Length: 265
Image (cartoon, rainbow, N blue to C red; front, side, top):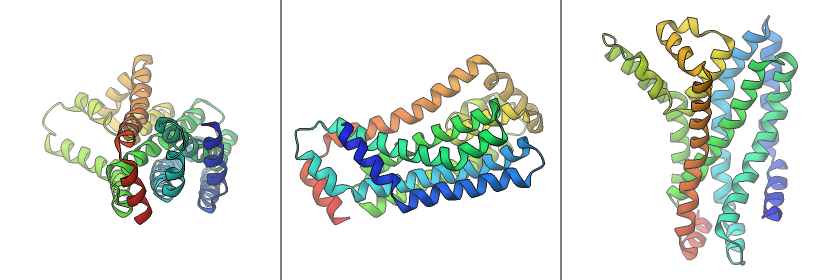
């Protein structure tokens, strides 16, 4: 397993797309902090960039990498190696590589300009979001054996969580404006890992007052120790469940179909 893991990490870290990803994050991060007159404003500006770009790159790059590794996976499956070890090695390799790219690109500027709990939370959020969307990429890869459909499904997942989900929440707020649904919003937020991550950082920035009564409810729940534990538990489930489903599906997939479909993609 370690040999596979080392190979995957070395292969990904030498990939030009990952290098460009780290450089893009670095340019954007240093620019945001340099343009703003305070570190808190820089963190707030960078938060939106991270929550938009990190999931996008993580889910699309990981999905493409899995499909492009079809021949290598075929070779590994012909060896006396458990499928769970192969699949886990690829997952950990992608996670570690993309997290390293994130830490180099965004983590270092954040620690330089915001060496406090808010900066630490931003880094933790970036790491978790990376792991979550790599997990969703593995889910996408086993959802269909067609490469184009798999990538399309991965993009749809990103669109839903990054853009459409917020629109759905706003629609519910307008439709039920006459009803006290603010507490229900806490539960609905748990359905989106991006929104959960955003709220955690915003609460550390203490800008919940800008959200009015709903922000006060968010702070009453997510700002407590219990709320923190629940939030990180939910984010942990977002990492584990898609990957667990993909692993279960990968174990059930027939070797001949895996080989044929991936090679044809």
